[in-house]
Length: 132
Length: 415
Image 1 (cartoon, chains in turn yellow, brown):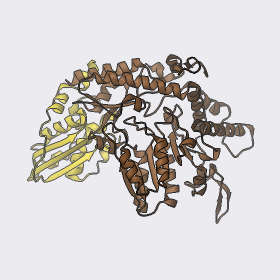
Image 2 (cartoon, chains in turn orange, green):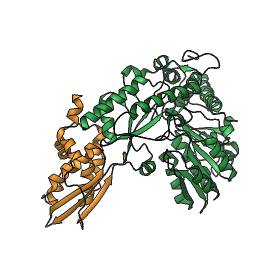
Image 3 (cartoon, each protein chain N blue to C red):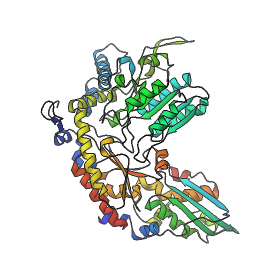
Image 4 (cartoon, rainbow over the protein chains, first blue to last red):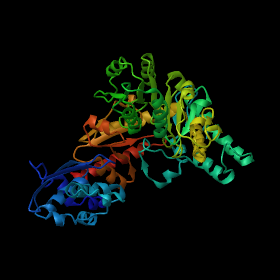
């Protein structure tokens, strides 16, 4: 079905099958994981931070193509970014980057990594993620 | 519809006229292959009509007014209680309590019976295959009372470890609670034997019948279980209505769960005399239309016949397991078809169940993907989630073929 081919775009499948920055950081400055209570998917992230800049970031997790690809994409975006700038990343930024129509049922998959970042790095409760 | 939906010579097992059955369910006009009945069932016109008739012809509250439509509403509401009693073979109408669903039924027992009977150090025996609805209420009770929980494990086939079950009984549990049928593995637990053994050990027995009553059937009198709960929306009835069966002497001795209207005999400023069973446990105006719908659903199931439904589902389960077994990388969980209800949970190497369900949705095939409200079982199976197809009296082989075709497409996309 062409609709599925568009939904599971090549770069999403690529990030799912070949996740970037996958693994742990020893002695990470920030380490946090979150679960999707609806399906049990998990994403955890480790950050090494120096002078307010994310020097290294790695993620671990298990879940669907959408949740894991979105984590992989996020690590690429975050590397070298200041914590200040990373704080501004919004749910629309994440959804724009995925570039596909996400149904309400799958929104939590797509935004799980953003929740890890917001809660882990800034202690935000993630109201933004919970309002759909 | 009493004879037209199943056929067969007297004495021979009836076979279902699935096309005639499907014509009773408006949903199927959508062309969607619906393989998620363990989640919620579809509802036949007979159920919808019974509810619509209440809303349009005799919509009134029950148990309190003297005009005719109110009496008629009361009559239909009470008729469902008689139908439930016959359906599960309870001795008395006083043993049938209407709840919102099975979660509500189990919480009623955990609060009312549990608080009055469970003490610090008491043992509650559950199983690792429980739905959260038959797990979390007991965790809450244990936290409150200091009781402890033990869980019977499953073997590699997804069936209860009876050796563990009997070993735990030797510790003299207060309560043993288990699913009639596992919502994920489909495992049919031997509820009569488990109940007899638990009783011999002095325990009270609660059975979560959410996946059992409509596929396998139950005889609560013969089984002798103390509590049995089921939920309307999985048995062709609407959401918002469930049933708690409770042994009469236990219910009599239990304090009320919720207080309010309908559950009282007399109220004074300083005290209340509670109503007789079952009203004691039915505070507030109930889901009248939904209860009436449940009555029509039970009529429907009984007219088709649970034996014929079971035979049909078994045939479909064998067909599905054979077809799914031919897909490379697909792994199924649970016992062989003959020992399970019409539920098949599986996963495919390299494709998360959510992605399977999304692709199947684009093929107009509905399945459940996720932890099936049984996260401890997912941990036990060492999976994050499963995909689950489930069948009912209206399911066809063609729907299973569409599932298989959709799975092949998912494999193509993820190849």
